[in-house]
Length: 142
Image (cartoon, rainbow, N blue to C red; front, side):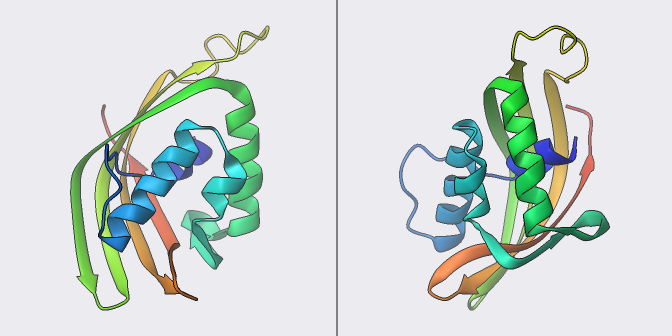
């Protein structure tokens, strides 16, 4: 699910990282696990684009719908590679997600409990903050 992919393009950290790229990814994780679409979108550049021409506004709308369907969302990130060059970076990772759908008639079996994606993110500093500028992904076997 596209919203799952966007919502879960993050790296788990138990402490606040000092690297701005890791801090951005930790913010994305916290927002996804809190199911807070507005907080997640605050980590996206105003000019954010994703696969198939998805814009920031469209991503926010999809995240709101996705988060409304789930009681809980959990994220695990593996194989993180970050190539930083000045005020920008390319990040590659595998994101494993799990979630528990809300108990509503018809949702059982429709929403996947687990998914995995390989992501490529372009991140950079804009106005003093590090933001996700673009994202692409493809599903992988969990």
